Length: 306
Image 1 (cartoon, rainbow, N blue to C red):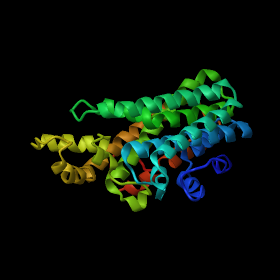
Image 2 (tube, helix red, strand yellow):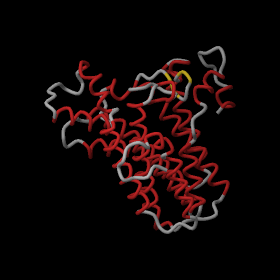
Image 3 (tube, rainbow, N blue to C red):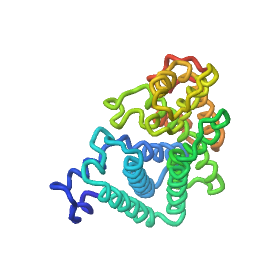
Image 4 (cartoon, one colour):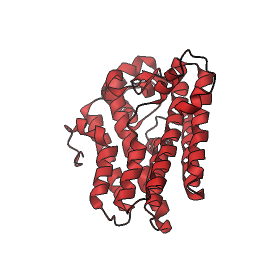
């Protein structure tokens, strides 16, 4: 991407500013792909590497678009791309990332392209659903469906592509994708906890964006329903309720509730998969995806933190 961008005239003095805005991160989806591949066989190194590259490029593109939509100023400890350059440049660079992602995947065959295309389509659908999310007492399934599309989809692709790299039986492809989606949802719920309990310096990105934008994540929704049960009559979007809602969302009660759901999702994810050749690899996969959960070890919910 450095070589691609270096040949394009950009409205910045130094193209490295753009590269810096795109760099960093934990490469979590790529690492998940490798772990799944090694858990279920001896992966083709070229397939696994190129699939991981394509997946990370697609993920990074989605983050650039998300930061514009959410009005976020920071990403991975750096100014977000639309702040480092401008919105038009950021949109087009993200589109270029998508193009290079599919260009990379094309050499791996139709199956890899289809997996990425399906995941990216789900991601876009999830973003389109965001404005429709509600705070009602029956909204949990809608919130989780949204998060599964928005975040779980790329983890589903990581599992599916990892299985392809290990030449797993094609009959299990749907199981791998669904398993990855469950674990991806668990990751999103962990990230949602961080958003209400951490700060921008530690996160490397804007803190409290969902509360600021009125997006009901599971911790925020469960906290709001608890306030309603206690007699709160104000709308969740009322700015005067924001501080109270933030405190309740960061409480140990909300932490226990969310961690219990994360534990259930981990079990669902494992239950969808065939027998692994290297079971410890699956343990490492969960440990890696949910690594941030260990800082919430104080709440007793019947789920051992990796």
